[in-house]
Image (cartoon, rainbow, N blue to C red; front, top):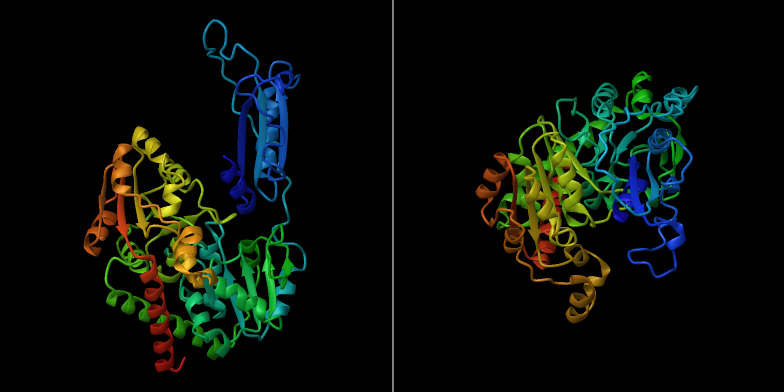
Length: 481
């Protein structure tokens, strides 16, 4: 529960944590199953209460309303109720059939969607200047339509994080750039720099993008955010407004057309180079697996993606497409704990065909969730990319350590066979080494849980990424971009 609550805090997700506890007078007496749960989650809940159920004087409906209201109020986040029960722990005489009506939450104070002066401030900042939108993770389903239309009208390019909801769907994607990360490492940002960057949503997945922004303080950066301050680079000013309301409420201020067209042209060159280069790599490889999934995934699907390498490969390889695909990830605190459980929760909500793209460590850390998937027959396809350890660390400075040191502390090989492990929990599973088999599995979502394992080499994976980025740089040079 703790990882979920932390993700909710930093991901602005309303969540109610209910914990059962023993009476206060049993604390520190040696009573079994009795620990101190007060402030159990530290400073992470927005609101917390510790209640002796038997003697609490308030109406439980009022308490429920407080919980819901606190979770929904701006910024949304987690709340915690620790409920203390005294034995007997079941109602004497059998369970009660009494039901409380569902309580209405208390009114949540509304933030101004479009404060006075916000539109004018934005127009003044971007008028006649080379303007780029960087849209990071965000959850507003209306923003792709509104922002896509505004960008098409103004010509302003949008760097679309895979979690922005802008890459896939029937909205206008004519100014959506999906290759912002690799354009940065190829030097294109320096050749066609923006003068103004509008930041929407949380910090983008791509570290090269936000490190470029940090390294270029002369570029005006404006975050459009109704609440909170998400800027580890210390480089932004903030317009307090709902992005949808702001972009709906301002007229177009066209970007310098020649500069803006360079961005969309470079994106097309980079996307084509990535696709072509990925096809030349021996399969299975990790970026190639994402490309195969993207080509086969049905419209209306949810792709829940683990942190570490999976979300970075989705950022690199998932293209712009007409099909509606909602890509999600636990990027509040960017943790891998509880990944399978959160994905199973999405699948259980029956929002559409659900696919989980897991790294081996994110699957390993939550492996017992497979028992729940089997018991409840949750319809989900789990794709585990197994490179036997911490693949992302091969891209970081510690990769320069001697192999015996690196493997012990960062590589952390586990040797687990996920097909066998899934079978032990009652989940049908199979290894997949052919791209056609992977695409066939994705194109035909199961009616219960199913796991497929793709084995890759984490050392070779570095070379695959290097070759993909080199292919993009070469293609841009040939195109004069």
